[in-house]
Image (cartoon, rainbow, N blue to C red; front, side, top):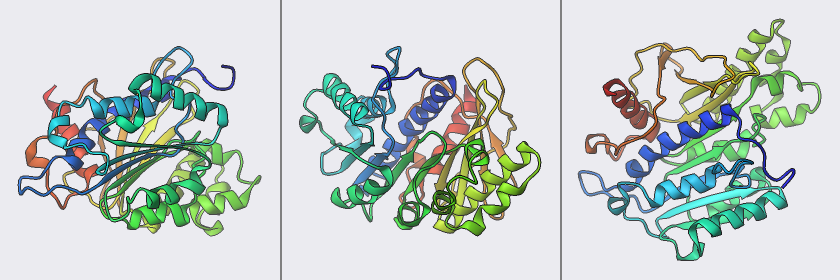
Length: 327
């Protein structure tokens, strides 16, 4: 298994806790009928860097726990799962990891074609396959949540991939962004940087700072600006600081701020223990707001939050904050 599986690091485990909590709320928000009886025709989830489906000590990878938590969600009966309505797309470039992922999903769930949702597995480059698979599965014009959880180098072009998802209604992206990765490599492949940020003039300033902390923040600001230019009005950034001390960010891109309430401050902790996270909402006009969102479990999103016109990042974030305060 050398080179196929790797150790689950604390920072990755922290990201997984966030994904679980977010998706536990996102699925019913997207799939349950609204109070007015509206039901979305189709919802698509994309994991563009899916990995092998398991870690070295047996922990589940994101494709496994995402599918499992959907199928066994407390609201599954009310979410009206059908193969035409719910699509999960998993892309993995490495041949050995892709084959391992296939084996993990089959061992856990049996014949994928017999599931009440459609699971699409494809080997290849995330940048090349994401838009193609979204087209093949009929995802366009319906809600999409696309997760680009690379090693921090993004590795997906702003145009056309991120921008086309941004133009799609009720759609969001989650991108793993490592400022230090860019900070150490800006002279190596400027064309790759151009693709990530949408052009050289949008990232060159970030490479000119003197202090590493200043440059990290400038790199992050440059990517947030790129998401805004792509069409995502708001960015919800989650900062993970593992034992190495080098920050890693999950940047959510969404087009609506509705429902976001963030009033308490919390800074990330440097520790060799499981990483902690904080969330920061960044917009063109708003002041910065911080909210702790860590928790071990999630209940159903209250019906009062299921409004047809609201995008999910704001709604789910509001629900997270409300629930956290009550715990």
